[in-house]
Image 1 (cartoon, rainbow, N blue to C red):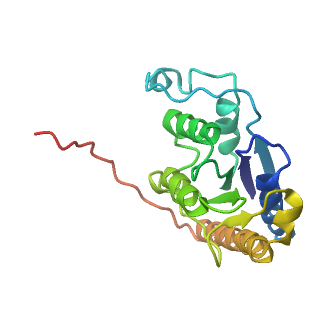
Image 2: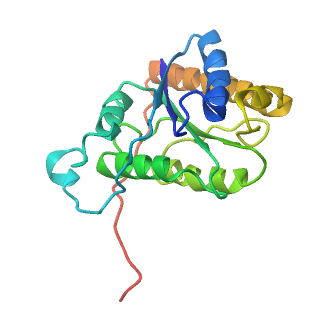
Length: 206
């Protein structure tokens, strides 16, 4: 089993990475393979709703790592998405990245458990947490929680490690994800499969 993790921070090994690493350690201890993908610092194009992806099967803006991440997603059993807080919201980079990834091809994400982790010096974490959970909530992905909202506080990685409750929250998140993945695996061994009915598209204009 494997959990694919996305570091949505412009800092490769900053506070968000520190939080993800705590989750990663716990997952590895439970026998779950992990990989952390960094979105880097180059500008990311937002989705332009060109719908070209419906023709070619991937996002037409294909040189910034989005399509590569989606390909990796096929082999993943679960996901952790991490973002720092910028003005009480997720970074523009990670929202652009996830928007294009999910819109161009949601298949490798559907029915797989996921969690969102956010990092802040002080405030804005719950707004960011709510914002990014919506990607999972519309994609039939079970959302994994911890004993507190999935967040850490600190201005540096060293300060994050001093956030005892936040770091504990990350460890418990790892345990919960590992447990859920093993439950899914056990269900598959018994032949259990999740069914999904076709989704009608409606609007409110009559």
